[in-house]
Image (cartoon, rainbow, N blue to C red):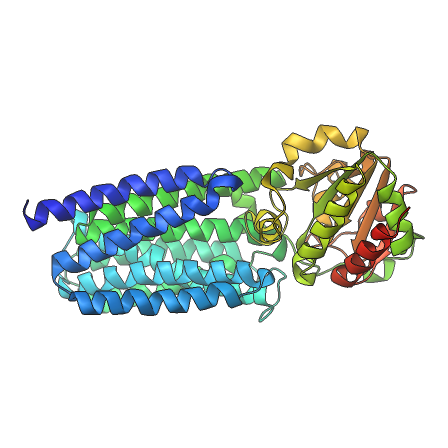
Length: 462
């Protein structure tokens, strides 16, 4: 068997492993294995490419694998769960940037490629990869708090962005010589600059409430950029893997939008989210019923069923391990404990699933919104840990800014207990009437410390 056939067979095996790995990501129980399978597929594809093109010898390949493995392993173990969305944003940025660099390098090698499949692929790889690179770093900065999480807008922003998109397309056509007579290299440099600017302007008007959707969308863009890069260099496995990431990312983005009852256009152009304009003087003025750890333990320890609703506050406090201990102690007392996961809870798709999996909470106890919403009416107690907008009854009010957003119907349970630092609003920037309900107990404090107190009190129950 000659080398070319062996490389093609390796690419085919990689493509198959990508599909199988992606299929296994649909279930939390198999997601870890699916991710490992897809990672191995990419490793095979990279090694086959390096060997086929004679870019590196085996010493260089093994050295690169070792160095990358060490860096990746350290990063994976050191990063905190609260920083996982930012890390995903950086991954998207690097993926888009790498694809853009491939397209740029190929164009600079053949600047007179003209209006052809290769030329169009180069421009697509550049613009999608470029805007993914800068857009992802803006998302990273918003998530990290380096810049405000509120929408950053200016008059005529959407019109400006529209003109910029049209200008970029026209410049791309000029670069390929559609109108003739221009210097393609100079035009291409300007085209690259506009691509990077598009990424910044695309993300700055998006507020914190929509960050899960933005992360998913940028992930899709990074896949599309990789697929375009595959067309540029004629690499089939890159085309396939990029298309898989792009398509799955777009599907996930649509599911996230459905989870907020918003269109993708509204997310991208709506300037929604953040707490700008909120009249904080009115928040917390109404009376609430407060509870301490002892009272909460009594509410949870003598019932038949408890549903836990995790939110971003759980990740911030790193209280997932203590939460698992509470769940285990309640189950030892015969309480049926379930975990309700809203599709946009946290700051990235699947954030709460990953958080609870880290604490070894059984996958079988995790329920999506559609699976568990009908159960709240027959649930004795709901324990909300750091969630806000996803349990806000205001979504049922046609006049609310979150009108129509699917929420977890926790207010239908017999008792609701909310663990939160304060009465501050969520990313949507509005107050939550649930906090002031006569069936709600507010357990204020840092979630990790409060959960530790709750563990102790549940243990001491008779």
